Structures are given as C-alpha cells and as structure tokens.
Amino acid sequence: QVQVVESGGGLVQPGGSLTLSCTASGSGFSINAMGWYRQAPGKQRDLVATISSGARTNYADSVKGRFTISRGNAKNTVYLRMMSLKPEDTAVYYCNAGILVGVKEYEYWGQGTQVTVSS
Image (cartoon, rainbow, N blue to C red; front, top):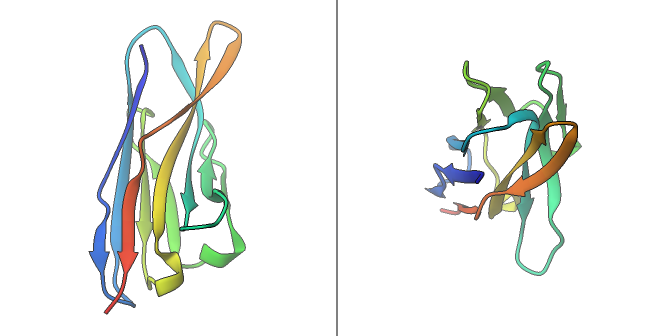
C-alpha cells in the first residue's frame, strides 16, 4: 500500500520562507514524477511545481523565481522551498506522486498541509 505524507506547513509572515516535505512510502513500486499543488478556499486545485524522475522541473508562473522543487537522494521524497511568500500563497498544499506498478501508473495524493501567509 502506498502512502503519501506531507509536512512543513504553518503560519509565516509576508516575505518569509517555508519548506514543505513529502514522502511516498510503501513497497513494490517505483515513482515517476512528483509535484505540489495548492487549493485556496473557494478555488480549484492548481499546479505549483512538478519534478520528473529525471529532475526536469516545471513551475506555475506565479511562483517562478520564488519557489524551488527538488527531490531527495532516495527519489521518494520531494521538497518545496518557498521564499518571498505572499498572502496570496495561502492555501492547502497537496503532494502528488506518480506511482509505477509494473507498466501501470497511478496517481496518489497526500492529505494536504496548510500554509498561511499573514502578518
């Protein structure tokens, strides 16, 4: 069974920094791309950043230059370093993992972690 668990959310002042972590655990699978999405109250869930198994990255325009996505050495962990945070970055942040079982790929989501940017 696969589990995707995020951590690292919290309250931060505008201009501050925060790092989110996400680990996919279990056995019998490998991991393709991983990514972060966010959902603000009353809005749809939007892509923040993704990173492929080959470390290619993709960012939403709104976070380019401020957020950095990276993967751990074991490839089952992904980080999101967020800097110069703005109130509009406030949202629940969700981790997404593309899990490969044989030739099939499945999408798994974490439970979400709240990030609040406020003075």
